[in-house]
Amino acid sequence: MDSIIRSAMLDFYPSTEHLPGLDQTDLDGFLKRFKKEAPPLMWAGVVAGALAYETSPILTIGKPARASKLSAEDRDRHADLIGSTNIYHVRQLIFVLKMMAGMAWGQAPEVRRALGLEPYPEDPGTWRTQ
Image 1: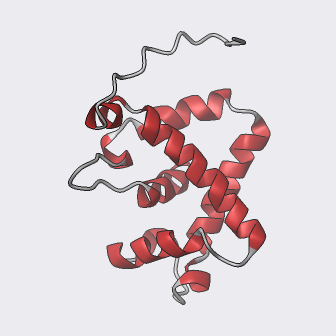
Image 2: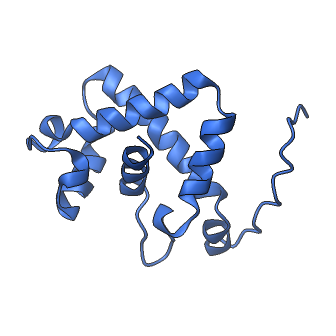
């Protein structure tokens, strides 16, 4: 399942000439921590979002194939179109998946440096209430 989640997240945050994508970050480390620390319902939402993304190219680009098996061009089109599908529940699952991918991308030291920001300090691994 992690490979399907990873594949979908990489499609949403590709590298560009100006910014690193998720492929240049520790996405596997983020997913491992997230799976361990997130509430089960949140993890279930990410899994469901990844499954919806993987199985929905027929809805967006009219191709009956898994998203991970599409060409790079078709994957890009699918990633662009799936977030605006008129099927509400699918759109919301994709939102959850994109939100977590955005958290992984935005906290990465490589991305923060490219944006002129200091990397976040190491997570102390404690629950913060303030």
